[in-house]
Length: 411
Image 1 (cartoon, rainbow, N blue to C red):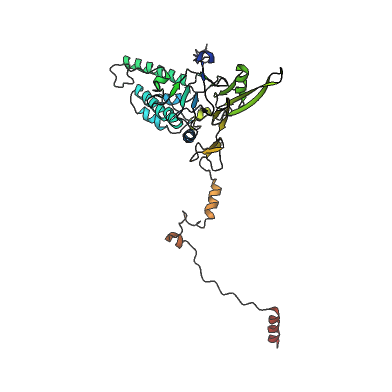
Image 2 (tube, rainbow, N blue to C red):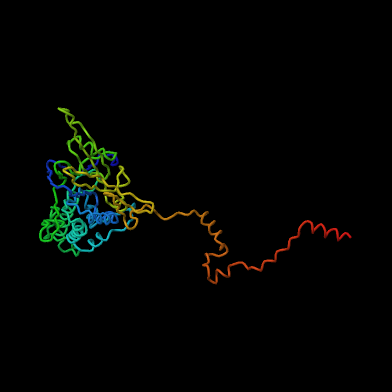
């Protein structure tokens, strides 16, 4: 059989999966007036830096009691960039400073540790400092083309084993890639230096849950990541409600949606109603640095905000909207928060057809020069056409006087 038609061995890597029951649902009790904020899909350090700074200002003013980070918070691609150097002819954007700093650190362990420290200080600690809240990180395991924290840890451990084996098998090589005596943690809280962040002695309160866990607020609203998606925004949270019979806030896939619904509970002795709500959180990644996500599935940038009022949870998903001046804003509780400068714009360099450019050059008054002259310079003055004094206007005579003059000439 020719080689071109022979069956070839293909190894398909299986993504690890789990369930919400196995990951556990953590109860969270909040009191009247307390606020809660949920965000997802930042993919630090490939996050939307402009809107992230605006969001931090919002946290400083609102001071929520809890900030929930529901998956996709740290970019696995950023860690892969520390060692893998593949040719890419589609994306030519420059690498971010955090990754460049880590790549210059030296051995593989030093690179991973340097980037992990920047994640802790520039992401988690800044969120905790701005909000003064408890920060809960719910890491993601979900697949379906979305990067997640499980694959980040898997890649770090697999690359570490490969480089350690190479170093041990080449003891005389001048290229030392890793140190087999250095251990890189398998747990996220240890890898990023978050273990022991208990809010005591001036430390921020940062808690890391199991992959894909849930948070149940006041036994009324379930915050989760989810593991499936639907084409239209709001549909996935509706299916989640149908499956679990709970009001839902979910983050998977980066869409923005909010819906509310009323159903009948029973009618004895009178009609009794149940009130439900479902929300989907958007993303805060940089669409240029994460261009491989494409313009897909009606995703939108945003987050979720809510508060406790008399035992009920009132909240909604908050989208980012771009204004006429190019800057993006979001509105919470009647107040608008706007970025300082337009970020993540889609405007490229203007294309001017040659015919239009030539027409503009001909109309500029400098068609006889190779370059436009600057007003006030000797070149501009010498290029002006010579002018002379205008002749004095002729005096006009009335028709009666002209006819009298003609009669006198005949005499």
